Image (tube, rainbow, N blue to C red; front, side):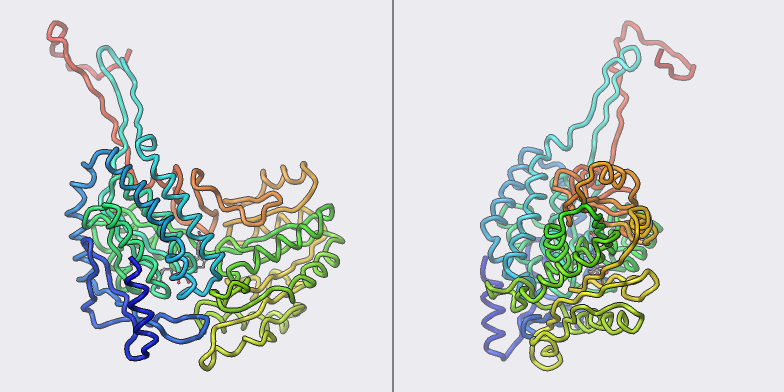
Length: 517
Ligand code: NAD
């Protein structure tokens, strides 16, 4: 199972040939034939380590054919057998968590502890899906009418697809495929082209666990592959996680083509700190939630909204913590924050620092002053140190856009009402949090805030796997949230059966409208 890692590392070290990441179709690795590919970098060194094949429309169609062919057999496989396989997948992922984390660090750049955390949260989705016999239970009403029973089943949809972002190359696929295959669908994963190796390793583990050929497929690529998914009528549902413009496009195109779509988009997550909050605790939470994973988390805190006179001491407490954050390569156990995913992304994030100060914000900490910054322009990594912008206002570019990097913004408002209005007026509504000791304020916040996931003295309120994950407003297009009970609902559809086993003694012709009473 370590072959993939060993091969690509050896090739890279030899410098003669880059590792190649190919597709996984029908239970085996399949080299791309389109002639198109993309680069994969080690963000800690800035060097290209691999190339990833980009699928053509025909290659995607072949994967759909294979998945479509596998569907009848897989949906007919007993619940008990599917459960056994889900348990095996769960155990193999847990057994190989260090290797999976290694791929995440090597291609995304996140530090090892964070990568292991990602795998652990993904694992919880596999554990939830191990309960599929219970999750698939229907309902039964006896004697709905004389001698008539009515019952509801949930059945899988067929071939379903998942399109995933760069920032969680293992967890987000697990958010999707765990419930999708446990409920009897066959699955095509189109991972982010920036960090594609973890998905192939997962595919190998699924095969080892006994997932039949064609049930789980990985097809790499760019917009061509995504459009092929959206256009193919054999694909019944699409789950997407990524940026808002692409999420909107996926939702509109997918639904127009008759698919069920859940498309999760970007975020701007606010953390309100009330004057009565414990400042040290709020500062610890803000720093952890803003800079963890270099701010490349859809639930990262990107804006602290300081209410009243809490602002000065809170900014001072945050500032005091910043120089202690150790930035470095993800595989260095000392590092707390790694590089950003690509040079382009790092430069885009850094551009908001100049824009912020030009538009009147205070640049309290400038990540470009970090000794590792700038190396990415030559042969170094894509680093940017932690940055803090204070006195940000709603019309500034840094506030109007999702930065998705290690930049925390502070906005100062006078009252709780102004703070909630800021959150509610923002086009995104993924996560939000309030820090206070006032139960009444926390309760009011939970009632009136316009966001899908709310933390009360919890900065990153990602729901556990037996709830479901989803934002409001421009953070989610679709009707059902991801994973958990709503994930099961998304990947299944209801069938209601009305049944009579006639008693020949009471049978007769009746042309009247069927009655229940
Ligand atoms: P992205 O939208 O650029 O890419 C996501 C996926 O869409 C990738 O597989 C990519 O290949 C594909 N894609 C990109 N451009 C496309 C296009 N024009 N047409 C069709 N497909 C396209 O997102 P990203 O940069 O990989 O990830 C970061 C974004 O994801 C951030 O906005 C972040 O907030 C968001 N995100 C959201 C959540 C959530 O749960 N709401 C979770 C993680 C990440």
